[in-house]
Length: 127
Image 1 (cartoon, rainbow, N blue to C red):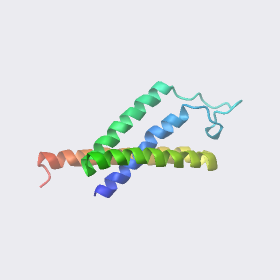
Image 2: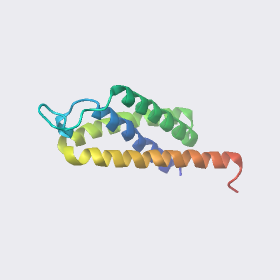
Image 3: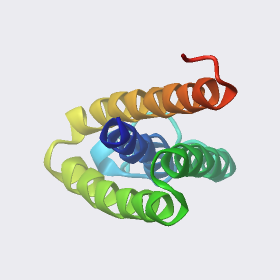
């Protein structure tokens, strides 16, 4: 079960990474010079999403693996998945954003379910 929670925790970083990447004008996602795409989101909202994602990830990871391992998992997932997102953005610009957002949402939902499960277990409601 902890491996599944760890995978969800890692994927949840894509929520904030895609939001953060959208704040910078990028030709890969339609914000280049002369593009008619929509304006990038405000950096303040991206900061709020990043902090919220970090809190969600930190809570889920530390509940599953402990404090040190959980925080190491969060830091490593941001580094590795950030690098992979940049690589995917440069190789497959049209497909990388929607898939990164889907995977991030899946990871975030997994974190919320893991936290709910930990609350149920701690409350003694689960047999």
